[in-house]
Length: 145
Image 1: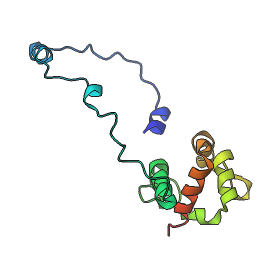
Image 2 (image 1 turned 180 degrees about the vertical axis):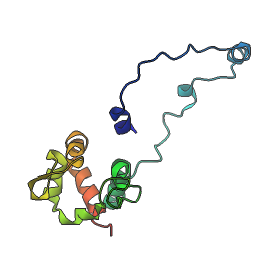
Image 3 (image 1 turned 90 degrees about the horizontal axis):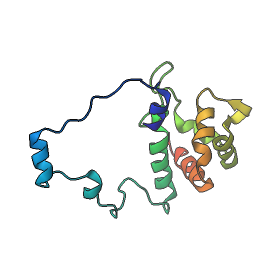
Image 4 (image 1 turned 135 degrees about the vertical axis):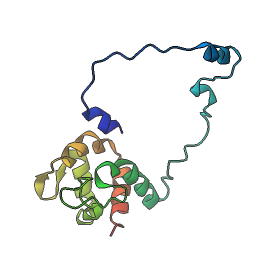
C-alpha cells in the first residue's frame, strides 16, 4: 500500500469542511462516539506477526508481507505481460545465501545484473532487512515449487 501511494502523483484540491449535524453533536455529548485510539487495545498481541523461532514460518510471513505486491499472493508472478509483473520467486533456489544477501543489500542480481524494478526495491526496502530476515526469506523461497 505504501509503495503504491508513493508512486501516484499528488492531487491539489481542497476537501470540504467536516460538518457535524445535530444528531452527531448529541451523540458526542452523550458519549456515544469514541476516538479510535481509545477503543484499541494497545497491549494486545499483533495477530499478523510470526514467531522468529520457526525460520520457515518467519520467512513465509516476511515474503507474504513484502513480495506479494509484485509477485502475487502465491509468489508465482504472472505470465509475460500479465499482472503482477514479477517472476515466480521459486527462482530464488539459484541463489546462495551470500548472493541473495548481496542482492537484497545492493540490488545486484546473479550475473552482476540490474533488474528493472527489483534492483531499486532491494536497495530502498530490502536493504533494511537484517541478515536473519534475509536468510529466513531465502529459506522459505527455496521451499517453493
